[in-house]
Length: 49
Image 1: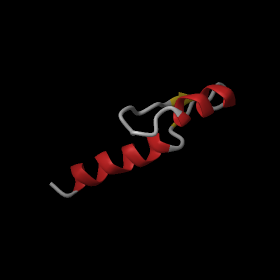
Image 2: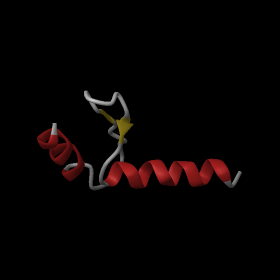
Image 3: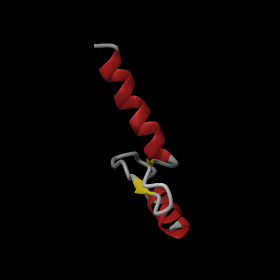
C-alpha cells in the first residue's frame, strides 16, 4: 500500500485530486501528502461560508 500512496501523491502535485486510502487493519479512511492539503482547503471553505 505504501507504494501506491507514494505514487499517487507524487503525481498529484497540482492537487487536482483527493486520494483516500482505507486501512485493512482498522477500516479507517486516511489521506496523505497533497490530498491532506486539499481536504483541509475544502473544509476551510465549508466552515467559513
